[in-house]
Amino acid sequence: MRSTEDTMRSIALFAVLATAMLAHAAPGPSSCREITDDTLRLNCYDEIVDSMPRPDAGTPTGPVPSDAAKGRSDTDSAGKTATTAPALAISGETIFGKVGSTDTAVIHTLFGVPDLDFIESTIAQSRKSAEGRRVLVLTNGHIWAQLDNANLQLSVGDVVRIRRGAVGSFLLSCNATKKSMRVKRID
Image (cartoon, rainbow, N blue to C red; front, side):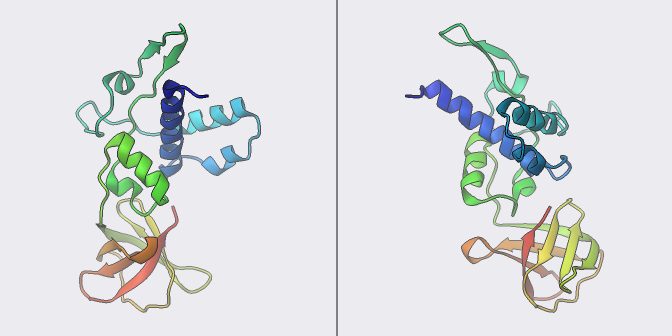
């Protein structure tokens, strides 16, 4: 039977790995999944996490234990040393539309990240997919793909709002019109 400490370490490791997968600038976490050796796979994820930006000293990241925030090592009752991960830069906007409900709940709980109902950003790039649907790159770094056939007049520089829809869906609308289109985050 697993101890509470082992369970907490597993949850913390899961949170770090999930956060690594969320970083759009991180190189392919999907390639790490293909590695069958546990140690090599963990090293792959460690490299991704190490390449992620760290928050400035004054940047709030939610409730993180001080030892974890400083990356200190602790010794447990059995004399084993466990190093806790340093705090990662993560926000409600960073994960909005990115992960499933289970992952989101873990991140909200462990990092105190707010659960947003919507985000607003500006269109930096707009292109058509092979299926003729829009793919929008926003100034916040998000990339969203159109899922339906709605015809919205959108241009680079337009401010858009993406809000939660029913059953885990997302709707994008432009401030200039009341129409919306169903979208999915693809970055």
